[in-house]
Amino acid sequence: MTDEKGRAFTGAAFSESVKSIQETLGSRDMMSRMESLGDQRNTIDENLAMFIAARTSIYLATASKDGQPYVQHRGGPEGFIRIPDDRTLLIDDYPGNQQYITLGNLSENPNAHLFMIDYETKTRVKIWTTAEILNLESSGRAIRFHIKGWDINCNQHLPEYYSMKTVRAVTAKQVNRIQELEQEVAELRAALALKA
Image 1 (cartoon, rainbow, N blue to C red):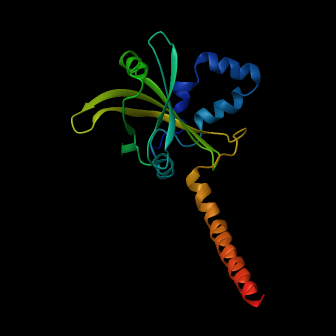
Image 2 (cartoon, one colour):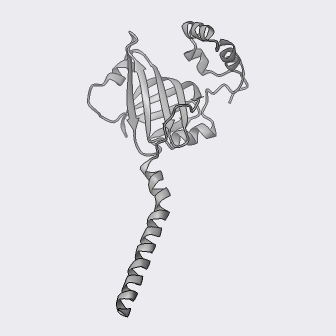
Image 3 (tube, one colour):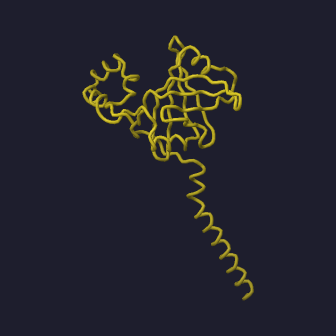
């Protein structure tokens, strides 16, 4: 982290029109304090790195040079988002429906936004970046994201969802116990049948 104060993402997110709306709706004083206080949040710290490494699903937002927005889901196994250094993320660009809207947008407007949700911990992280398309001989195409700033959303209104991995881990004890009880019932029935 740098010694500078203030959250870096506000420079990208708080346009004059955003500030005007904040003023109208009564949050501008609070947002102004946030702009000038606290961690800059323009580098990946240890907690953010662990959060990113655990993602299997994220959303990537881009816009054309005319401002037409586009949001695309990106997913893969844990670790599919690589962290080359504390200001950079790298994601392989796997072939999809071959519309190439994200790549087209990035070719004319490098601003990109990553939105990551962990429903189990009710954590949302938003990352403002500039992005570039890389053609890598070893692994095909990739997108490199240079972090401008990041922030954590409040956890209000997030539904409770759990991954199958979590559900299986939580229910494994119950499944084992059911199997033990079924075995015990079968043994008791067999013993009763011998007495009859």
